[in-house]
Length: 248
Image (cartoon, rainbow, N blue to C red; front, side, top):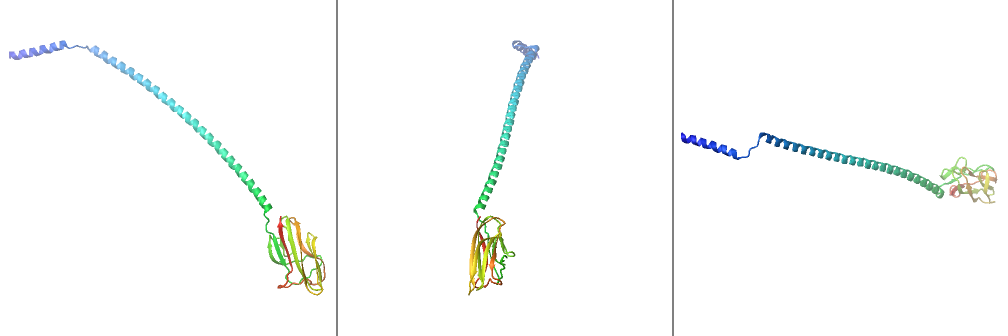
């Protein structure tokens, strides 16, 4: 019992002695240090917040500058595209005008150089009387390129200006005579005389004429015997009237 009490007393003495040897801080010192740390942390937080704000502002400024540059570049690109589009459209219009003009010039040149096909040939279909002053009508059309010859009237009418060649071939009964003219709008351009005392006689005549569009050409007797003096034979001789455009 006594030994136990001594042990307890010795332990208490050691505890008190140990506490008296260690440095001791008061409650106020601890709170002061904590407060100091909190103030320093708050200051650091404020500084970090300020730095973050500056960083955010800097980033915003950079972004705004980038947006402005992008908008400026976009406007520049748009303006450039519009100008290019206008220039391309103007170039296309100018090119189209030039092409149209050249095509018209080529067509005019082609019309001047290329001579269209204008040609006809017609014949009589039997023995024929040819009263003086009347048109000899050749009713059987062999060809009529350009549709210039009229088989009802016996006249050829020029559709275009140009140089034409006209030819006639006529056969007259023996002992009969005929003066035949190639007429242009009522004016004789060539004349042939056909007569043989004993046999049927065939003659040809031609003329070159410069015609304007609308002028007409036909065959007309200026003097002849009466009756069916023009002889026709389907196998041996034909009476024909023909014409062709040589040049325009």
